[in-house]
Amino acid sequence: MKKNIAVLIVLFIVACATPYQKIGDTGGFYHLRMDENVFKIGFRGNGFTTYERANDFALLRAAEICKQLGYTHFVLEGQQDRSRTTEVDMGSTSYTSGSVYGYGDTASYYGTTNTYSNTMPVKKPGVELFVRYFDGKPEGRYLEIYEANSVINNLRTKYSLNKPQK
Image (cartoon, rainbow, N blue to C red):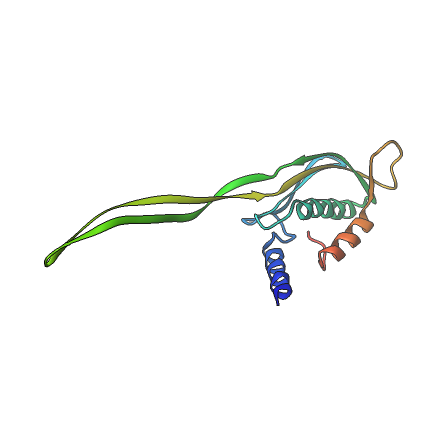
């Protein structure tokens, strides 16, 4: 029974994570062309999104742009962590304590109330990639060379995504 509840909790959290979508109120991907074959591509997630998911979705977007432009391979020339932490107000809690004194038909209350604000830090992952595209496998010394079709197939399968984004 406890195992089933844990599985449901994990599924709920994953379902709340930012989906693979254009940037909007809850996050998503964005890109900016820097040169003919160089782009800055980013992904911003919400508080339920993992950094791995944000990074994967930025990489998936880079691969889709690669194909749309007619290139086959790409390399990362830089990467920046654009994660941010925000404070979420969870309301407040008040505690009241005191004493009641009775005198015949009347009573008196003397007390104090203390109110505490409840805030919680929420980390929202973000990543920006600086990507250079190539037609064919590039020559030279690169730490990692990505083949667009392979990245697309692997990440779409990993996250159960169906079609490419435009």
